[in-house]
Image: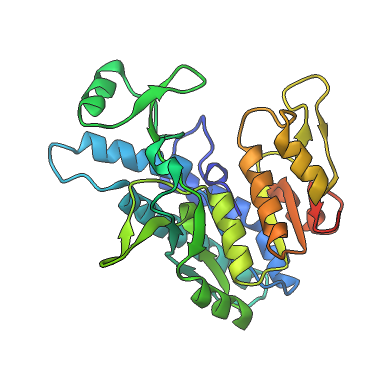
Length: 307
């Protein structure tokens, strides 16, 4: 699982050229794993890219019909699902590997009665002006201040229960192809009794989607690559320390308390714990460039199914 911020870091232009450059850089550890013979499925985030799509829709609202949020997730999954395969294909050929790379734009099924659908919790998109915020609020969009005091959209983020296309992903992975799937957490859908699958105006957490996909394709290891070199206790304090190894019970206790602090590490550890609960052997959380070292137990945080 690779974060969308790895492909479009804050503080610089989100041009396509810059995103391709960061994509190529982020795939170095993936190429190492591929040439070692690992079977690989890649899940990626889409936070910055999704935020830019929201802005494009907002700016062009008087000229073209706006796209529902789920369609924008699909759009960014295709966009990033083009950058990663092209970059990975070129890097593999340079490394002497003939392995194939394919993107499967996937749907993440959620429960229609998930309480999260009625309680928008996830901030998305760029900072809004007070005037733009008022316009969106008048249209029924939830806009609130984020922890930094910026006015931003807030949308539902239901828990995924199934990746619809996981059978196809599993077949491709076990054949030896490298598959990009559940991009942006997957396009959220629910099962309507008469219509079948229907879209939901929401977003799905990509780490939770990665855990579900890993379970459904029978993966033995879930490797979450991020911009932090592992799980920290007392994060943001002078007593912060990286935890090299956790048992499942230790991870559960950490999730119950406040030691993780605020931020994005909690859903990552929750995803790791869920993966192990449902049959996975090992989960790892590590810095983007330390994936292969984490697999050897020399970096990151390893969460084991035992204990």
